[in-house]
Length: 187
Image (cartoon, rainbow, N blue to C red; front, top):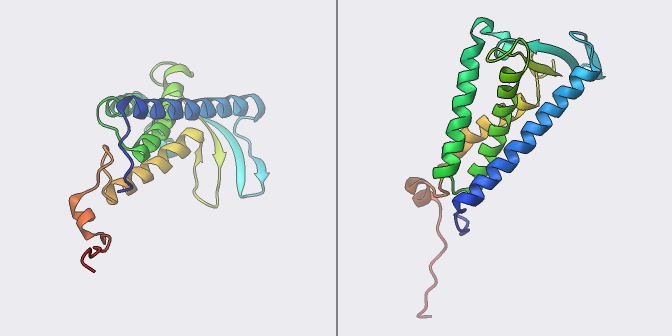
């Protein structure tokens, strides 16, 4: 442990809220720019085949799966957002967890905003996707998706290293870490 005092709940909540708003704003702004400037379903090569913009309105989840049950994604996104807000208010005392969950919440809110406010309407709105990196994966995604995927990887890593929401670590892992050598005071 670093010896830093745990965050106060208000500080953790503020970090989560600020980061969520910043990611949500970045996501919605880039989607606005994509809608205003990109031709629908037409490839615009930005960096050759490395980065291509391709504007689509995605009625489903990843790879347009589940187009007929979009309302389920809306419920799932709302539930995840609610859980993160509840954790922020009751459990989070770790700076790392606050940052990761704030960025994750921003991504979730970005796609939830599309599901709620975009055509064809609540709760089945289509998510705006426009980023394509064919060398990495055959998917078209958006800024919110980037934060959702990377922050879920970070959540897994925080769990694997044993960092709890309150900033403490697993006792087993702490015992396995080498301690500082004892200083002999009789010398």
